Length: 249
Length: 135
Image (cartoon, rainbow over all chains, first blue to last red; front, side, top):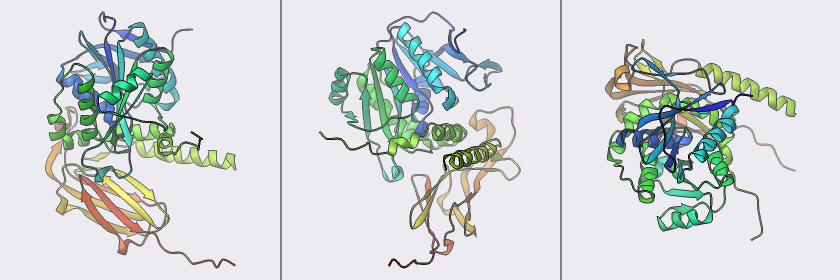
């Protein structure tokens, strides 16, 4: 049987690169961050996802059709981004295929960027950053870089699967999650995850423009947020608010 | 019970899908529909709305019924489709407008609102019922 999800490479992609994932999730934190990184580093489209499990949507750019789920990159970095929320019904297949592709590319490390929803977000001046990782050594790295490790709690949605599949395949992976709005685009939280990423890998991405243009970003991301909200509800994203069951230390 | 819940979830999904399948903008009234959220607690309902680029003094909240409020706000600058990267549509927008249905009745006369970091927060006390004596 033909694969339900196919990654089509537009050009030869070297192995051993760093991968950054910014898929639609709470506050569109990862999506906004990925879009900012792609724009600042002037990354070109290098691959895309082709799948009947995604809605029949093409992204028109200068009149030409593109897949809404794409990989952008240069000689050091691959950024995985999506213009649409990954449907809850196909999130397993799509993410697993992406991670298989990343495994075949022998990625050096995978970062998944996202938000950690908090109900009183608008009372917070500067969102805090938290992290989780696929192995102990990376947790140590998070601590060294000033990222507080989430000791216990639930992670739901695309980044939960990215972390899980990477851990299963021994691909080093880190989730960087900033406190964020659940239902509103949060460019400030995106700037916080980019700043944490800057400390972790050898890149220097300026976030001042992202903060200055915050209102424009919020305006432009309204529709994507609405659609993402619907998929997150189907994935039972609110599980992230749940307190895990009692256990004896 | 489970069947009822599934049925309820299906209906809710259908209403949501129908709500999604229309534009979030109206060129006729030059208005955009803001992203809104409703949170219900034991004594109040909190409605929030994301209102980027608005003039805080222009924000108006009107109680239409005890389970429906209307939010309007004027933007500081007009925004057109091209500003949002869309070149095949015509129209410009100068305000936000929406009606938010509330899941429980509230006392709109005692509502309070504040606007912080671009987010409008409206707190509406829930209508009081009658007390049941515990024996």
